[in-house]
Image 1 (cartoon, rainbow, N blue to C red):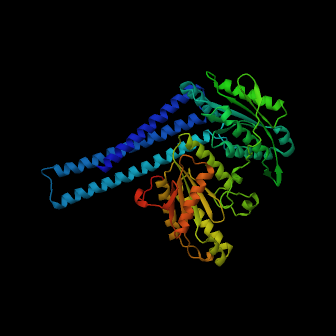
Image 2: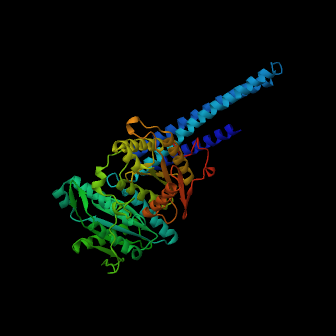
Image 3: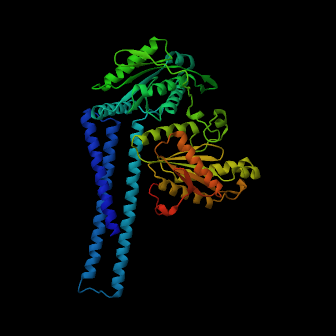
Length: 508
């Protein structure tokens, strides 16, 4: 019965996946009506072909399994057959073998389907992300503005947009080179996401121009936040090739008016931006629908210039560039700035109704003692082994970073806290069973992990702080364990609330 239910559910899933892929492809072709397929149309067609092939293979396996079961049943039902005890036992053994073979085939098909789903998700994210700055691209921006217009027409929901242009960028490129210019654009994107990313969608509009869309907010509500973000750009030093570079930016803000189109909204924001440039740049103006006005903050309003590299707590968040360069890079392990950028983007997607998001912090237990007793080479071996084991249990969509000398972080898109605990326990067990080479000095080591899932009210700082509390609880309770932070309480993970450890739902 279990096998038949599994077959039915898998076939239903495969058919639904094929149907969705085909509908998406038809919509794409109708919308473009181009003589040649673009990259996305080809991807959709290839994905559909793979899903159809997988569906056909599962259907063939099911037919074969059904035929085998019918044949065995016919043997048992044959009145002239030899139905003694040995024949019955043989038939049962054949049924068990056929079911086991069918289950293995279903497991393989399920793994392929999950891999295909991860590839589709990854492709969708890449298709909406600017390759240079890693913020949303123009397509994602246009979609968000279009959604805001629809919400305004349907429910009267407010929305506002901010256009930001880096001042005299052509002159900057001529002076410092295009590589320096690219680094500054990446830095500007980080500053905007750190200051705006929690309340709006940050996107690259084109060239040196960025945009931020604030769904559900009017221009008066976002004026201070937008202006502080613009001023944060002017207050940030961008490091490149030993230089500390500075730029300023001009901005234009506009609120969506009733019965206004996307083009009308962007046009008014662009006119406000032009007013800022005409006023000498390095300022912001907002449009009220009739004229443009200079944005002025109250003198008591503090200007926050925090970026992901300067987010607060030294132990976890402070990312000194010189210190980061001194660390030996580990394979498939990101730096803190890159990781924080991705966290801000993933949190923004989660707030807009995306899939669940989990975060794990990992600390090598007694790392300072290992180095003190056996030397820095032993510490290097421990870190490399830890990184290899982490990457072995992580999925393709997960993101691994090194946050400190002995601390790693793992971002798990699509994972609930129970899924993350299962992965954490697999990793903890793998480390505990690992025996190091003799040159490492120490024969073995353990790790402690803190796990959280994104919840309402989480921003970059809060989710990291909650994960840190969970990790500290694991250390305080004797190390070599996984602790979770749910609400205000951090506790040792309760594995009875999760599924079978041998087959975690989201493990690779």
